[in-house]
Structures are given as C-alpha cells and as structure tokens.
Image (tube, rainbow, N blue to C red; front, side):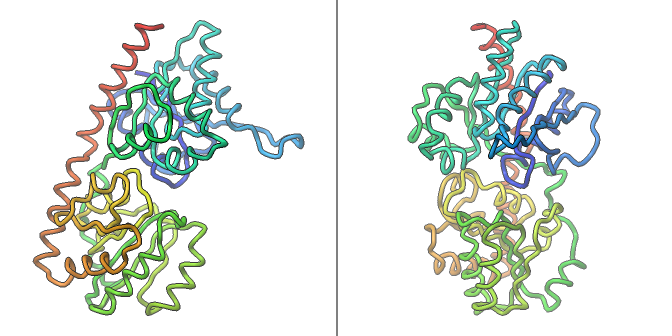
Length: 379
C-alpha cells in the first residue's frame, strides 16, 4: 500500500506517533511518504520504503503569515499524483484535515480519488480546536474525513461532546516500540546522577502551563523531605525559565537537573525510579506509557486518557489535578519500600505490553483496509 502521512515534525506526541507508525508500516512493506515542512525528528535513519517530501512556502511581503495550509494542500496533490498514493493519513486536525480535504477535492476534479483518515491527538480538540475561530472548519473537515480515529476513549467522548461530528470514530491507542523502549543496564550512568543511591524522579514534557511542571517540583520537594532524591526535568518550552526560578527557591538546587530536549529518552528512563505527570489534561499520556515500558511506575493526574493507561494502585497512582499532597504521599508510598517499588515496576511493564507496536499496528492496517473498501464503494 502507498500511504501519505502528514504530521507536525517537531517534538510532541502527535508527531512522534505519526513518525513511529510510518516507520512500522514501512517495515511491513508499505511505501510511506511523509509530507511536512521539516523532516520529523524521529525520522533519523534511511529506509527503502520511506520518503520525505518537504512543503515549501514563500514569505511574500503581502502575507503577515505564510499560507502553509494552501502550500500543504498543493504538495499533497503533487505527491499523490506523482507517487500514486492510495491513502492519506493526517495527524492532528489543524490544519491538516482541512488541507487534506482541499487536496482531495482538487484531485477529484482530475479524476483521482484519494481517501484520507484524520487522527485526533488531543489539543487539536481539547484546546486549539475549541477556539471559536477554528470550530466551523475543524468540524467540517473532520466530518469530511473518510475515517476518524482518536488515541483514547476519553478523547473520543470529548470530540463528540464539543463538536457536531456525525461519523463513527475509531479508538486506536498510541503504542510503544519495545525494540527501543525497554529496561537498559545503565548503572554507571545512574551513579553519575545519584552517586549516593538517591531515588531518581523524572518528568518530561514541552513545559507548557497545561503540563503543570510546577506541580512536579512541589511533589519532588515533599519527596525530598522524606528521602534522598534527584529530579530530572527533560524538555523545553515557555515555562522552563519560570520553573528554574521556582526550583531554586523551594528545593535543594543540586537535586534538580534541567536536561533540556533529549532524543535518547529511554536512557534516562532506564535509571529512573518514578515518573511524574500531573498534567491539567492529557488525551492519552504517551510519556507515561514510555516510562512504564522502561519499568518506571507513574504518579499522574486522573485527567483525560491517563486512567486508561495508568492503573490506580497497580502501575502507579492517579490524583485530582493540582492535588500535590496526594501525589507526594502516593510517590513516597511507592518509593519508601524496595519490594513495593519492584512490584510496581513489574506491573507497569506488563501494562505497557498491552500497547506494544505489534498489537496496535494490525489495528491501523485493518482500519486502512476498511476505509479503502468503504471509500471505493461510495466513489
């Protein structure tokens, strides 16, 4: 099958999932064409079945903002015709779904039928998509998709609640590639970070307010009062400077490490004892799943799709958004006893296996075939 994939190439869950899905499809023998404005950061090696097509757009003085959506639609048309794409899969509704619909209509005028699937990832529905500026176009383009998927049941329910969607939505959860995310022997690395046997707590995100990284620091400070510990903060974003200032005021400065963006996240998870994800909203919680795949239990909020991944009392604990005291108490409960910690680590790993690439990939392939058959019957 020849499949076009449109996604954001930068750090973020939707781009990661789209890229990893494309790589897995290529491994299965499908021809995959990535169409975006920059090479996805996870697309870091050559594969005979993977092709990258850059969307170019010009900055004319007339435009305050470059017309990316129009350029993207034109690029989709060009690649679909030249490469004979059979299916287009766009990740994140804005602006990819509307660009896909425009491209589909242009191709239809040329006698070329290109079905497209829209995968909703979270903030395209829960945050940006609900902005009144975008609601009519988002609703229209989702309804015009030949297939619609969400990454969790929670996001599916939210989509129906906030948008007038008149089509069935398929839930296909995010996945883990266990060839990459697995427990690694990094004891020598751990000794560099925690030379005196401290517990290592980790958080990774894009440092936006919705991630509530300040809560991570507050939880850590309470843990640190009860036992020696180190905090690894991985990622970057608009809140980083504020969090750095805050951590210096409320914590032992030597115990909090800001590591910035890291590609080899699995190597940091390999030395961690606990992962904290206190987000205000999470459509799925891919970062939590990556931690669990590396045998790291999770302390998280109970919002969005997180309860579908993090099982209370088994793989970690869930608390109401902003309940720092409860999160800290649960974290200490896991960390203060080595046998308890080992049991949580084992259960976290077993839960993560339910979301392995080998289990989720066939769901996408089956859905692709179903959408193609339905689109062919109505063409």
